[in-house]
Image (tube, rainbow, N blue to C red):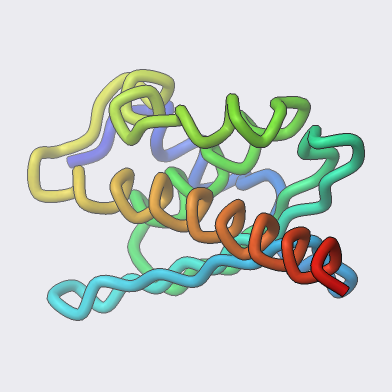
Length: 127
C-alpha cells in the first residue's frame, strides 16, 4: 500500500514531540479517519527555527507530519504558509489516493500553528 519512502519516514520520523515554550501551536483532525495532528513551532526573526509534531493516526499521517515539520524549519513564516500538501506528497514520492487527506492535514496543521503565532504576535503588539 505504501511506498518505501513513506515506510522509512514512518519508521524513523523526525521532529516528534511538543515544544513546551512554543510560539505557535496548531491542532487539526479528520473525524472520518480519526487522524489528529498537533504541530508546534518556534520562531525567531520571522524564521521557523524548530517544529515538532504529535500525531495520532496511520503511517501516512505520521509520515506527512514528519515531512511537513522538516520542510518548514529554516523557512520564513510567509514561505511556510506556501507549503502545500502536494509538495509533501511529492517529497514522499506519492501516497495512496485514500491517504492524500493526511497530507492535507499536515498542511492545515502548519498553517494553524502559524496563524496561532501571528495571533500571539498581534496580541503582544497591542499591549
